[in-house]
Image (cartoon, rainbow, N blue to C red; front, side, top):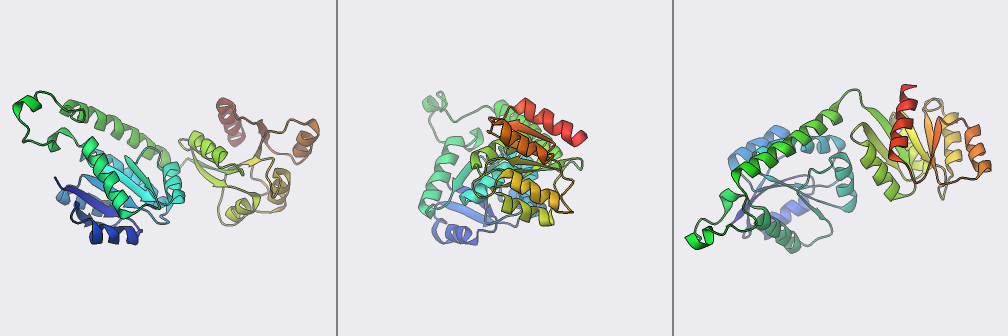
Length: 293
């Protein structure tokens, strides 16, 4: 059978490749990034997969995709994602567990075709199974066939999770936290731990953090003590010297245990410090205390 793919996003080169190279493999249609427009195309085109082709999309686009996922689940449409490593990472930080299939460029269009084909063949719901199998084969359902009750239950569970996450992400009471650390793994871990309760921004050094603070507000900064280009205490001095950021609370994250270095940090009057590896409960407790205090 020919699977239907609904394409949207700013990566026009990928979309062009689909129409130029894959019309023999898929039925293809494009739509805009507007929520209602996508839902109209889902209703009338009835795709098997919605493919978000990313190229520097905004946080607003990410939130739109998050709210869209609920409707796609109800319509039994899979959500595919393709983009650069940076685009994919940013999306997955903002909209955790939304994508059913993720593809990271660079990939040839032939590899993209094979991955989508393989995924859909492995995940096609019962109502798309080949109806021409004989009765003997039909008596032995394959591993990809699921009951309608199971599909409905899975959809309801996923929809419930997504609804909760949408509510959390759009709450007007959410505080913003900026995490400054040169270790990408630490940034990813902290963002995953905090994103359900806070809007989280990240910076890999003090220079990027200060650039961020020039135009955007944050309610709290988690600041790494040991960074290669500029140490945490030096960054904190700049934060305190800036009129617009001098009152932003700062919590040091440090693997340093030497008394002399800790005392140097405390002289700058941060609102706290946490020793690495970061204990999750201690992290949440400290952030809550600082923000409420």
